[in-house]
Length: 258
Length: 117
Image (cartoon, rainbow over all chains, first blue to last red; front, side):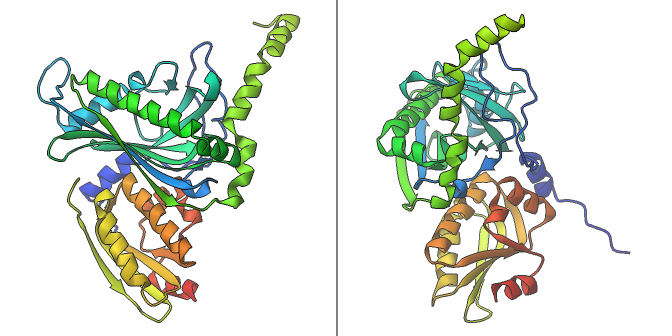
């Protein structure tokens, strides 16, 4: 009788690094009071092929000058950078933008709810799922309704110096987001967001450095088959939720609920 | 960036199909060799490109991103992209990332060639 050979170490590490597939996202963790838990539970993940707009690969990179591991003070390696990034991920985000995940450290399969400052400061609730984690990089995929359909990878490597990098392979999810992206509004917000995040990461490791951006248009075509994604637009649903808050407040008062 | 740990070979079993045999790791470092292999496999108007993952040792999330950009090139040329030899683990990863909706997955070369027509 033949038997299946045992998995190799490489296969085992791959099985540990990747999330398991799931048809729809589930948000099972508690959210802080005052936060918005919308546009994540029940949504599917979208890769860039399922988005509408032109496809871009945007790479934000910082060369960390003299990074040190906090507390020990030893010179930080790329693995130290990733370990610190995973353990403190929400802390590096610009103020006013929140990442609510069930665990304190980034793990494969986690679903996080994001509360972001959208265009004009309007609150926007969406999410991400952690699809891959190892000691050199970790990656998220975005759900239906997120500004971008795609993947974003956080990595650190040694290339004649220690670098930290955020690389996004993305399309605007629907025509509305693509319109604002073309106006420069969403793209500028994204560039500022990741630049600030990398600078905060550098500060955590006691390092200096300048963030460089490289943007490559991978596909100039619009994916008209994905125009219907607009029905999931998280900015729209978050806006409706926000402006109807007084109605929910009156409803709770009328029914005696808290 | 890390050194590429991938070896690629290109075969053309007929006038319509190019097969890329992948051995090693599909990571970000594999971009140049994979795109070069695609150019070779695609030469002379191949209608279908088949990726043979039978000897795939490892693929990380950057590798999945590479497959997405490969798909864009394939679609631009109005070609099809099929695959075979994926382990159950990597079939699950294709399902997780919804790449299974864009890349045909087959059990073996004969099935993939049959699907290529």
